[in-house]
Image (cartoon, rainbow, N blue to C red; front, top):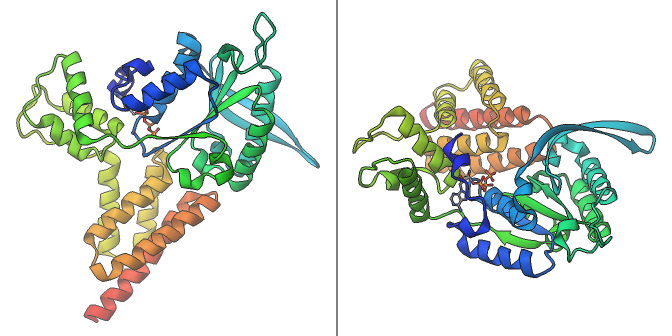
Length: 360
Ligand SMILES: Nc1ncnc2c1ncn2[C@@H]1O[C@H](COP(=O)(O)OP(=O)(O)OP(=O)(O)O)[C@@H](O)[C@H]1O
């Protein structure tokens, strides 16, 4: 098992990094009617860990016994029937899914699954259906709600209201600004900040101790500094270093992630030559990244930051503008590759025009 999974704290009591949030959540779940929750914060900050701990607090260890299912739904959309397929992760008490995976048909999934859960909601022995008894309540965890289409978010709001007596929603996303105000205002918003480098160092030292490793002075600090304040990234880097060389040495190189190196290469390719031939080569490399499940918006963001490092100050503003433009289009469209490639083509044209104007 990877360390990121092995050392994920399982209960709210064991959570150290977002201790105060965990404490408040525990109070909320045990003492009061838990509202719908919206967790938001940067990648690798610990949202999922907290959500899993909340579920465990609600339902006990049973919440961890999950099965993965590939479910299909037949949805009656007026004049036609739509077949939708999605992978869900479920225990007897909760269902977790990523509705944005079905693209623009995401709203049907949101409606259908909540209806289905409300219909099949468990009833306790006394026939109580109220939320007060947490154990008779079904919980639906929706990931990446910031990627849901507007229609899906509207439908989510309606469904949330209609079925709030029978099911609770836990929503998770990176950016709450991409979630409509109507959805946000119906949830308790829980911001999960990126952990500080000191907190990351604490987690790394804890893992090191558990694994019986000797860490050279400053080693955990160097990993934390390179982690971009992502706990997941820090733990993965730590494990990579362990595999590469142990005992650790003082100046051990902390390797960058493979995909990041690859994006950096793509940026160099773009800077060296701006031509249709080079664009074709870059397209192949972008496909390679997408095939390896690197999210397109992360590729675009990383590519932009690599290009900005190499770019003349004069062009930075314009390039950022176009990156934002294509990122927005990517959210509206279906095929991410078109939009990343369009950004590369735009960049090439801006940069080539700049070179010609400057050097003739
Ligand atoms: N409080 C914590 N204490 C120790 N380790 C933690 C804590 N929270 C998270 N981690 C570690 O960090 C890793 C990443 O956390 P998690 O998956 O919860 O992040 P996330 O915010 O959901 O990320 P993403 O948005 O990318 O899915 C976990 O696998 C776990 O090992």
